[in-house]
Image (tube, rainbow, N blue to C red; front, side, top):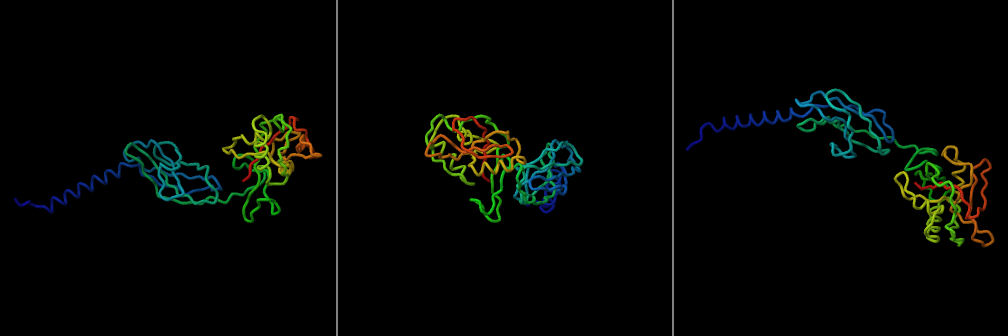
Length: 289
């Protein structure tokens, strides 16, 4: 049997599908993305405007961002209220000198609508002594003559924010020579590993630093004699030091006797001297960056 009017049926079906498709699009919220402002090395302000709820209440809105294009709510996002209207979003935890892509979003019972994608770049981070950074406070920035210095890059020492140990010996009761002999900048970590490998278990300065997990990092160590001196020089900017003596990780070989290690007084004169390993002194852990 010959089918009548096939063209008209195709047109009608096509129109019905088009209407259904458009209705489905109309069910998602309509939103625009606002330009980024107040951009720093790790923060920025964004936002958007929900101009239509799509016929269903907007239950979540905010911005989503990523280092790749077309971010969705599966990426990093903010949650900045509900309903139609404008909103402001605070972006934190960004990486310095990085390009990000952002879209405002709004969600209702039918799904999530997105605004036009915008891009922005964070500024380069200026690192300085006394700044909170990577789990602690920057205590020293390497200079050209220091071990580990790389031209055009910024590296140095980060001090733990506070003294958690205010009275601990250098050793665990064993006066053995550990051969932790490094005194210069860049030797504190090796000293600490050497001490812990030699002495083993116990409650003592190097072990405390080696076991420390603070600020999201676990690579802390007891500073060497010269590293500790940099902490003393910058003690006011770093903050939190007591007016007492602090242990370094540098063993002090006095006439071949294994009873001493270098200490530094955090007072006005800031002297460095041999300290008896059984003395209970202050400890401030550091890590390298």
